[in-house]
Length: 166
Ligand code: COA
Image (tube, rainbow, N blue to C red; front, side, top):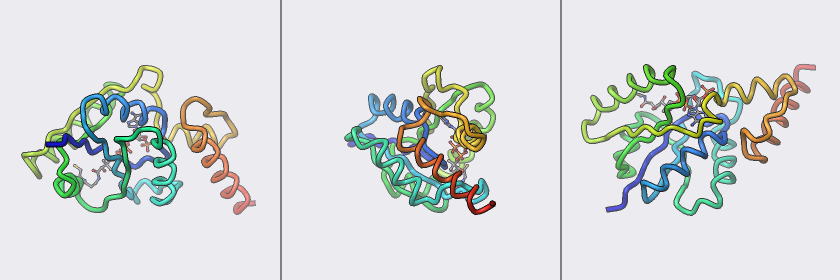
């Protein structure tokens, strides 16, 4: 049976840290589905459609990675897609408590679904989507931390926001 990892997150936007994790997971799983949650509470900068387009472009060379949006409970989505595991990244000790809570809750909701944690490369250990947005919002460069098309998209988004506010 095909081993499918479901990699859920907000991906607002996808970073090289996320991609690093996808590439690592592809060595262990037959397929990785990057599952985009709307995460309205986080008030994302990009719409779900925009996030999906950026991810699609970022993983175009990774034949066994694909992306789609999901709504509702993650465990229900994993079951629907016949996922073997939920994939999450552990960057630092600070991630641990929140990840532990989610993994336990997901296990409680469905005992058959395991969560697999992987560590992204050290150089991305302090990276978050928020930090990318923050740096760009103040005019800084995020080259090397996100795919080129993401860099352009974040700059454009902040330009639109600035134009609206002026
Ligand atoms: N490299 C770089 N950054 C990374 C990373 C990596 N390898 N792994 C995580 N991050 C960053 C993310 O960019 C994100 O940054 P942000 O907070 O600035 O946006 C942060 O770490 C963690 O967020 P993310 O990975 O997007 O996860 P999330 O916490 O936003 O998403 C869901 C959590 C979507 C998986 C969770 O809310 C969920 O499952 N929702 C569905 C509803 C559900 O089932 N709820 C019950 C869950 S128990």
